[in-house]
Structures are given as C-alpha cells and as structure tokens.
Length: 331
Image (tube, rainbow, N blue to C red; front, side, top):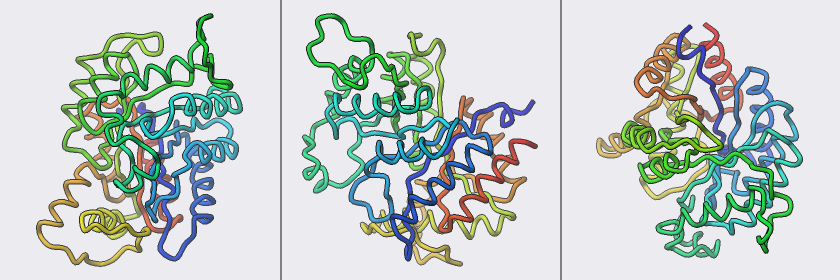
C-alpha cells in the first residue's frame, strides 16, 4: 500500500471571503465543504483564529466549530488553532468543554502562540504584547488543568470542561512548539502552508524531544500543506494565482478579500521570490501530479497526517480540488 493511501487526510479552512461575496456565503460554503470532506473520508476539519482580516471569517473560531460539528456527524472538528494568549485559559476550557459535551469524541483543540492579527488589533483584544513569549507553557498547563479531572482542592473549575479531556494539539511554524509538544507528549501540527522553510528542523526537534504521555505513546506529526488540484496542471496553476495574490498583498501591507485568478501577476522579482517562499511546500497540478507529489512529500517528511488547505477563489473549485485529492489517495 502506498503512503498516501494509508495516511489520514484532513482539511484546514480559513472560511475565506471572496471579492464580491459575503461572510454569510463563506459560512454556507464552509458547511458545504465540511459535508463533502466527511463523505470523502477526510479525518478532521479545522478552523483557524484570525482577526481584522477582510478575507477570513473564522474569528469566532469556537462558534464556527460548533456550527460545522452540528452540520456533520462523524468528522472531527477543531481549531487550527486557537491563539491561547488571546484568551483566558478558563474561557477556552469552557468553550471547548461545551463543544465536547455537545459533540462527544469529535472535538480537537489546536493551540498556537501568535496573535493572528496586527498590533492595533492585539491592543483591541486586550492581549499583553508579551503574552505567549515566556508564559505560554504556564497558560497551557492551566488550560490542561481545567480539562482534566479536578483534584479536590481545585477552587476554580471549568463547567463545562472539567474532565472532558479534549485532545490538545500544539501548532507551530518554528521549533518552539515542536520541542514543547515533544516534552509534553502531545501531537504536533506544523504550518507548512505558510512557513515551509522550518518544516524539517521542527519535525526533527519534535521527534527527538518526544516523551510518551497518557495522551500519546509515540510522536504524531501533522503537517499543514497548500494543495490546488484541478483537471490539468495548467488549470491548477491558474487557480493558484488566488493564493499568490493573497501573499503578494500581505507583502505589500494590503489585506483584501479572496481575489479571482489571473493569467499573470504584476510583481517584482523580489516579491515573486517572497511569495514563492511562503508557498514553497505547495502542491499544484492535475490528478497525477498531485498524487505523485503528495507521495514524495510523505516519503520526505514521514508525516503521520496531512492537513490540506485549498485557497481557490470559487467554492466549486475548492470542492473539486478536495475531491481530486481524495480520488488520488484512492488510486
């Protein structure tokens, strides 16, 4: 059996808002994609916390997770991730304890350190600018205490939350969370969808640092990966210009809605190199190309699971891309 055929595949959805579309459209399309992912046999469906970004509608991440979990029946639904320093650990435990109680055995809690936004929005969130730099392990330990069984002397309890043991994942784009996840015996998710340069070092650090825990007896590494699959290589590369425009606008300090694909991009050589650095792990092509490159990626990384994000402008093209990936695994 090929690596691809035996590797779980999952979905990372940023609930993108299209130019000319609406947030309500985005939420309807998220549910549509989640239902298709469930039917195609994908394992997880994660949503990510971002704030003050016109093109991303997943800011109220826990609310949207509940919406998706309620519209599906077997798919694991979770966060990729919740930015823990933006929130009191007690509140996160209550939110995810509620979700786990409503949808038992189907909720994941992926955690990150970054704010997921700009400096002005960090202030509006009431987040200490230093939060997460030195205190992330303490915040994580507090959160875990609210989700585990409470000792008799625990004065503050998460209700709901206490004793639900929602599975915690650490997310990262460097070696910090990789080492911490390894020391704590937690599963680790690496964000190669925008920081592929650190991928191999982070995976090495995680595996070397890993110590078995009650949650996990062996290291488990999930890798986020941009994938655009279409009926032909040429069409896939055309559709991929939507993601390229997103990162180009990010480099230029512009935050825009998801843009329609274009035949050519107006970028400087330096801008093109920067965009290609962000998307260095992207797999783009027709069914055969995508299958072969996914197999090669799994062989190179030894990833235990792939979490695919498909940044296509139209909902139909997103659905087609995930369907083609599922079919490639079947082959």
